[in-house]
Length: 264
Image 1: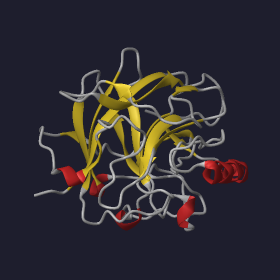
Image 2: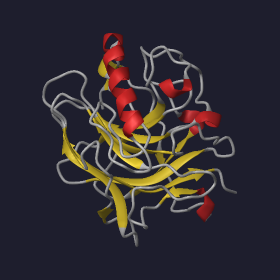
Image 3: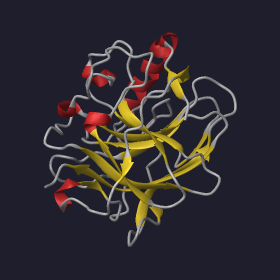
Image 4: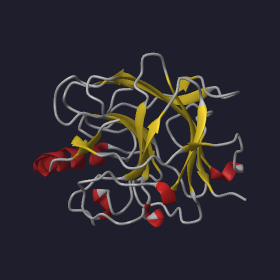
């Protein structure tokens, strides 16, 4: 998966569009089309130009789940809101560039779950489309915010995140997990070069597998972003995102049973 750099000359244009999208987004309602258009209140940023990728963080783990209160969303209620527990109440959304990348569900519309999932699951989060063959920046993704309205979520009692994921036939297998925090998201009012979120580069397969990504292994991408703290700020997390950026790549990405980890 190519790693990319956000060019600062686009920041002023991007932030103006982002402000409009954030103002329109609430309680799962459609938001205005923008680089970050969402059905909830989360956002991500495009990234451009290649650098070396950080070391891989995720590993396939045994089929052991934490108790129900650790589950962020299992999609079984078939709506676009995450489970209402432990102070979490955000919404799923999609986001896409303006370079011609196609994406379903479309950015700016209410997120719709798809039929399917690992084992006995009936529904899962799903995005499908194709990254544009030209343009800069190029990106598409889906994710959710932890709260609504968007704000920091204190996850210090947890050790990381886990989820099931797969790709469909013909899809790129390269997906980046992104975890915005107060140091990387402009809502935190700390970053001067924002959106280089901590996370991990995933190589998915065409079979459902469970992945875990400890917070301690999450890395920013190299060569850009300010500030560049040594670790993610678990006390100020804004959500989770799964993003593709490979030029011209078809994508068909599925995610289900998202949990926070750290149970005995």
